[in-house]
Image 1 (tube, rainbow, N blue to C red):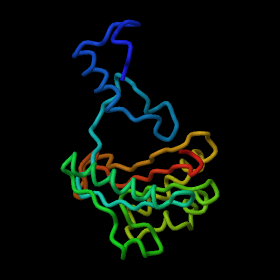
Image 2: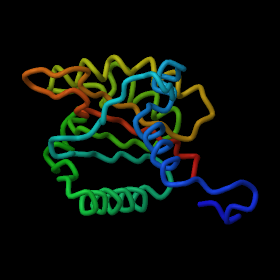
Image 3: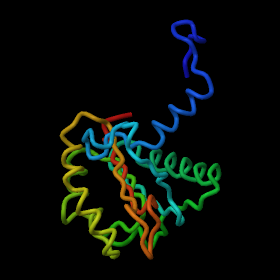
Image 4: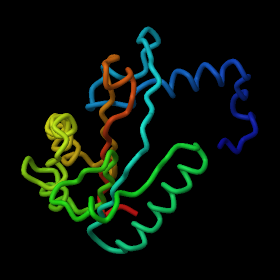
Length: 184
């Protein structure tokens, strides 16, 4: 993305690019807004990824909702084609439920709507899956902290911490993307 063609400082060689990619790609960018997960050369790293088909739901409350939903659906379709991973929108019957049941929730809204949707009794926190519901409860503090920051968006996710009978370490299990409707 640089446009100076290496004039201001030398361009990195292949080994430096690989090292930097590994350092950045396998670290967590400010998870829970603490320095504990920032880039630490001594921290063990695991690849976090979706292993089961990714089912997502899009919620948009504000100007140009249809355009946002259409662009998000197009992006998710493209993501599935590029990666070869099964990615699909939640079925209409899942969308009609009182609680969000997708594995990846994408929410674009004003602060007041974000506050309601992500409250302990809000529709994004309820879930028929007890494991996913428990995680959603644990991110409430992180959501509340993000809401008071000037950041336009964030993604919070849950992955398996260790191998179990049900999950492999690093397997992505749930994520929520929050975007302020006031932002472009």
